[in-house]
Length: 196
Length: 55
Image 1 (cartoon, chains in turn orange, green):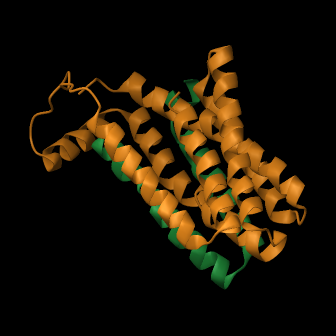
Image 2: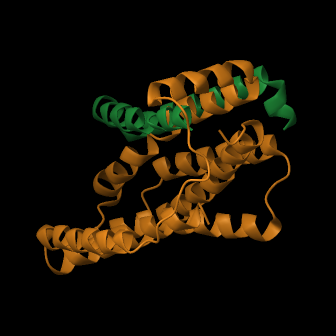
C-alpha cells in the first residue's frame, strides 16, 4: 500500500495535467493543481484527531545525533542508509533524463509525455501488487540485486530507443524495480531499528 | 527516521547532477553514469556488509 499510493498519484497526476494542457493551456493545469490542493486541505481538516503512540524526547538535532549513534553501532543500518543516500544520487538521475528523452528524442505531445510517467507508475503499482500477492521476496539481498539489475537494464534500453511504445515498456520495467528496492530497504530498517 | 529523511534528500542532488550532465554530456552518457554509478554503490555495500549479503 505504501508503494501503491504514490504510484497512483504519479500515474494520474501527469495524465490529468497533460490532458488539461492539451485541451486548454498550462494555466488550466495550474488551476487544476490549485483545486486539488483545496480538496487536500479540506480532506486533511476532516481527519480525526490522533495522538502519537510514542513521543520522541529531545530536540530534532539531538534525535539526529542519536540516529547517527545508532547507525555507528549497527553496521547493517549504516549500509542501508549508505545505499539509500548514494544509490539514489545516481539512479535518481533517471528523473531529469525522462523529460529530456521525451522532448529531444521522442518529441512527445503533452498527453504522450504524461503516459510516460503513467507507464512508470503502473510498473510500480503492478510490482507492488505482485509482491503483496506472493508475500515479498525472503532474501533482501536478492530483492535489492533484482531491483538494481531490472532498473539498470531498462534504463539503458530507454536511453537507446527512439520508439515511443518501446519507451513505455522500458519505463514500466523501471517502475517495477522501485517496490523491490523501496520495500526491501524499509523492511531492513524496520527490522534493525527499535521503534524510537 | 530523521537520518533516513536526510539520506532521501540525495534525490535533489540527483536532479541537479542529472540536469548538469544532460547539458554538458547528453542523454546516453548521463544514462550510463547513472547506471554504472548506481551499480558501483550497490556492489560496494553488498561486498562490504556481510549482514546485508546474508539478509
